[in-house]
Image (cartoon, rainbow, N blue to C red; front, side):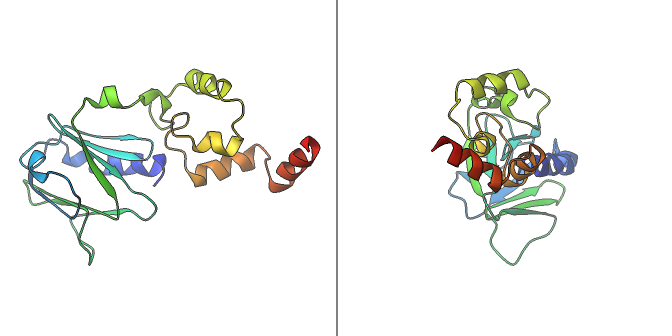
Length: 177
């Protein structure tokens, strides 16, 4: 999932903000006792990280290549993370990387690098690009420290819009060599 998909997920799950996690389980190797019984403070995203913020700890979910989620339904597979909420609702995450973050998210993440965040800073992105002039356009677009949330779909769209094709790349390469 790229940044835009996580914003849609965040908006979909906002209805569960304030709900208590009664039971946390799954195949992830995390300490489920740290999240069971806690109320959901917020759903956030940074780049390709989906964040469930609780008191004293947050859950970071990365959907990798084939990750998915289900709300109030299950797949015929063991979820990496299953959150059973106080009202009987259930959030299930499959084929994901799950990690707990015990630090303040505002200290962990640079929100100004996230292209889908209101705090995204074009000025800071330009500065990072100027500090890395050797980066190819495609590599710069996928650098999560510069353009957090950009994946192959957005990268390909940007390259198309700026007219960067394999033919262009071929011409540039042969002019330099």
